[in-house]
Image (cartoon, rainbow, N blue to C red; front, side, top):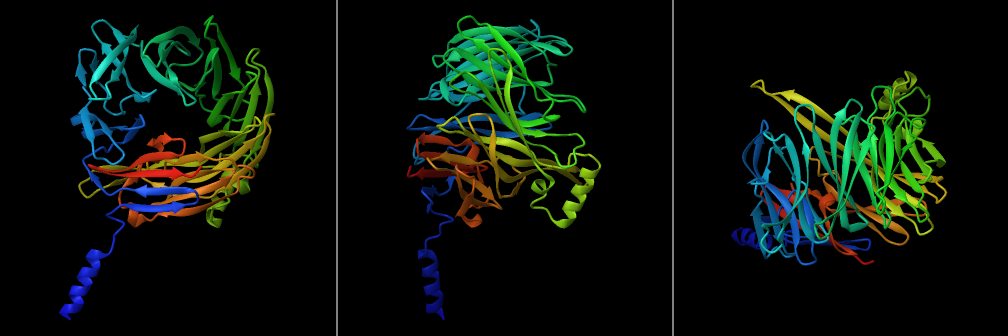
Length: 509
């Protein structure tokens, strides 16, 4: 009996446990490698980027209780791929030019052309001005270095300012800052600053915004040789359509070309969209809408439009509504009956939003738009002591793949079925990789990591499991905050408090 127990003990200690050691696996054309647990080194909630040798991330320490920071610190981390050399430095929160007044949101820090750049906003209440700065961090020791004062704007009483950073993923040599200032009901003004990779302001242009200060949002930043372009979305009121304006600023003359993208006939709410300029300078916009009106078999769908940027004229439009059968495909009979009652009452019966996750351009001028069916809601409960607690719920459902030809016509819409329910905002993020005939998606489903292979020709897909729930443990994969270290290699983190695992993915092509 003793010899049997000894044998079992030796067997247990000699058998490799992938949960504690390094785990490797090959799925399709990709090699996955999940490191062992790393304690207190290099972890972070946001990966900033990689310079080819080191990876940089941002993390936090301390807590924020009732908007009061207790021991709260932002930490910049620098580490190599093997986690052998790790440098962590606290981000200075109180300096002559920077006094952090808002702890609820992460720092606005980006890695641009292998440079760590932080956007800083500080308010001088006595002078009644808000100043915007850019701070560069030295990559060797992670200390603050070069500083650029972007501008200073009056702020007192009802006069407010906000700043947003815009980046073009196709061009990391320049980025933009838009400072929007309130100027009255239904109107505001904005200033665009373009900053190059030497941390120099190369352009400053002021323009009027036809929209309430608190209802507008800028996005879809496009850099070209001759112009800077972006959109401004104004949120509509009850039973009113959202308003979307397109801005194009000539880099030489600074002339501002503005026109409205007509969305009113499509639907009352545009959940998400993507813009692109083709070789001839025409604007292509594709996205998802919610009808919000009494249509017996249309609760929203896909749309695509093409505009002449010189005249602002709409050249073409195509709309593909989602039918009742499409929306209720995965529902039980009971859910279908409840949804049908909503439809018959003229209510919006699709509970999901459609958020653009990837845009894949084709060589022939076509494109593939990949969106995720997403839903967010909260539940509350009261514990035995009478304290009320709120739990967020993030539902990451099917991928919707849409192919549009160069003429702006929707050729097909396909669905790739998946489902993941999480209470952590990072848990449903995805990683995309493109090859010639198809694209890969790495995602989470029921606490397992999977990878799908989806065809570009017809949208059909298949999937395989990468890591089990036991291999991942209680770690949260931050797939949306990964870095691309080469054309075929990616690195990301699986995070717990004071712990991390490093995941590397290498594709053969």
